[in-house]
Amino acid sequence: MTIASRLTDMGVTLPDAPAPAANYVPFVRMGSTLYVSGQISAGPDGLVIGKLGADMDVDAGAAAAKLCAIGLLAQVKAACGGDIDGLARVVKLTGFVNSTADFTDQPKVINGASDFLVDALGDVGAHARSAVSAASLPLGVAVEIEGIFELK
Image 1 (cartoon, helix red, strand yellow):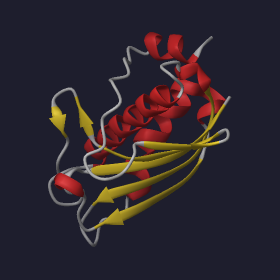
Image 2: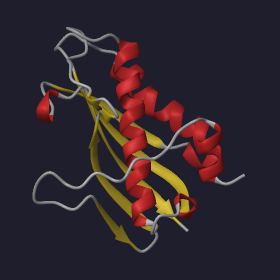
Image 3: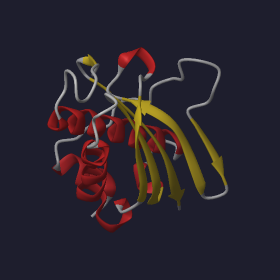
């Protein structure tokens, strides 16, 4: 089964890859390695804003992280000329969680992205990962995730 068909079966439609908001590129390809810039928690209804441990719970944070993962896949699809099936493997994610100083469940928040990628991609989606706290994130978003991918 192709990645595109798995996403369709899951009811996931990848959005157009968002354009960069400043002086950077959305991704850099070096050989078969693709580095994707941080994708913020944004969906069809706009930005997901909030601070974990203050005005958001882990489940809401995990949902925001899933949106970041969908954004990452949209960038991968763009890097592959519109064919998401050019993805060979998710290598590593680095997740940043907008959270209070005493919030310690960053890994549970980033699980929203990790679980989605493994559900959608199977073994191709299994990856190394970091999940860290941030005192704030751009535009007040709840989560930002960057990724490293292997392409075919």
